Image (cartoon, rainbow, N blue to C red):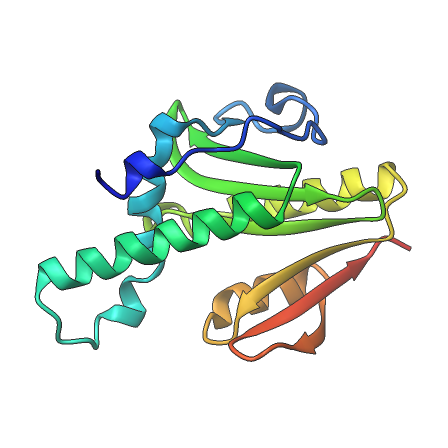
Length: 182
């Protein structure tokens, strides 16, 4: 059995955010991620780890096996520990370009993960999505929006700081950041 065949999205899903057509520019959409999206999501995961793995002198097969196993473990962690959650596939003109995974516990929102393909990074899409989450969190009376960022991802840290997230904790390889709605 392939790694992807063993993965699935949980049947219980949150419905926290409004429909994409109510909130996003016309060229952007989001929709609930489906099991059929897993090959794209696995490739997106590999794309986010490309710079980190560039320095590793592994044969291509070993690199792919490592990325497949890490993607599977991450997916299992997200779908097990954040329930219910919204697992959204972000699209540009109908083509998948990223993912946005969110959890709302009624007190605060957690950005479980936000990732865009390399070609779409730096175009303001991530900023737009995060500002929208902030707006909805404030509208819904949540206390904060929380996220985690890899310490090595300085570009993401700068984005979060521009959006007024502050570092709340150093948790090893990641920083926990918070944006209070008040």
